[in-house]
Structures are given as structure tokens and as C-alpha cells.
Amino acid sequence: MSAGTKKALRDVWSWRYVLGRLLVYGSFGAVMSGCSLQLSTIEAGGTSFSLILSSLAILMVLGLGVGLVYYKKVYEHKIRQLKNWNEERKKYQLSSLDQEASLLTLHKVREYLESSKVYLQADLSIQDVATAIDVHHRYISQAINENLGQGFRHFVNTYRIAEVKRRLKDPEYKRYTMVAIAESCGLKSKSTFNRTFKKVTGLTPSEYLEKEFPGSE
Image (cartoon, rainbow, N blue to C red; front, side):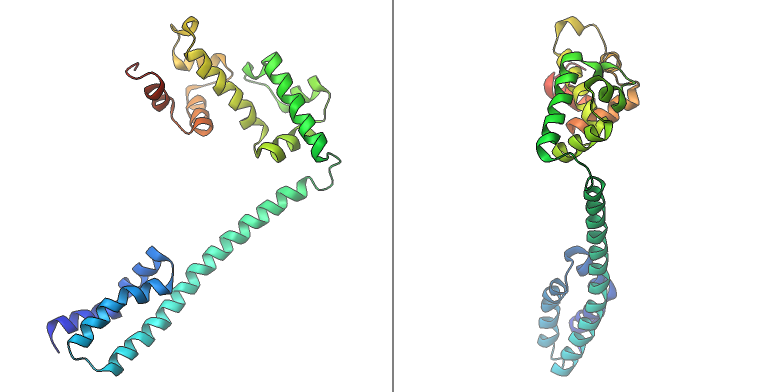
């Protein structure tokens, strides 16, 4: 048996090779595809066809085993996602707030926040808003979650970040640092601001400044 044939056989039998193909491509088909070149090399070296079939059979068993483990993990992840989604739905199943009322509630919340700008208060709570617009806080939470897929805190933070961005473009606030502006908009600390800004905009404050105000830093 030639040196090339021996190397090809080692590659076909290699656990590292089989597992690597599965982890990268996530299917047994990818393993077999990747092995085809190795088997061609074996045939070229004169190795018997029965040895090739034996190698393939072993690969199929190994690939099936590893593939089952991989897809079991994928399946379990999907089940967990479905369970979480069902729990979110069950949370509001017994609620008397229908879709029309839900949208109306969201409109009332938006209208109140935009007219009063209470989101500038760092300690603003959902109960504060509920009291102000005379709507139960659970309905407010439901309206925001169902229509926007957000929690109350994130919803309010979108207003705060929008105000930060507005003030950064306002000459009146030019003498203030970005962190000082953020604190005046209800974001208590630099770490809170950085984390919130990234979550809302997808950019860090520094990345945003570089994009909107090149060379300002």
C-alpha cells in the first residue's frame, strides 16, 4: 500500500475529520461529501472495494451517532424557544384587553410620554405612567409587549436615547459631554448609558459619534 493510500485511510478513519465536518456543516451529508475525495485517492492506490465499503459503513455509524447528538441539541433549543413563546402568550390569555384596546393603550402611553417628557426622570416607573393616564399597569405592559415586542424599561429608554441624539445635534448643548447629556435624559450613569445606547441603536456611543460627527472625538 502506497504512502498516499495509507494517509487517505487515516483521514477517512479520523474522528477529528468526521467530527469536524459535522460541527462545521451540521449534517452527515457534508461528511460523506468531504470524504469522497479521500475515497477516490484510496481507489487510485489499488485498495480493495470491500475495504472502501467497510470504511463507509463505519463512517455512516459514526456520522449517524454524532449527527443525532447535534440535532438533539438543536431540537431541545427549539423546544425551549417554543416553551418561552407559549409562556408569553399564556401571560395575556385571560386578559380582557383586546387588540383594539391594546393599540389604544399604547397610543395613550406614547402621547403621555411625548407631551410630558417624563422619560427624562431617571426613576420613572410603569406605575407612574399608569396613574397618570388612568390605565392599569398590566395593560400598559401588555400593550407594549404585544405591539412592540419590548418591555417597559426598553420602551422608555428608546425615548431617552432619541433625546440624547437630538441634544447632541443642538448647539445649545455643545458645551456638555455626552455622558452629562445622557444623565440629564434619565440615564443614571456612564455604564448604564453605554449599555442602553448599544442596545437601542446597535452602536456604542463612540461609534455613533464617529459616524454622525467624524473627527469630533
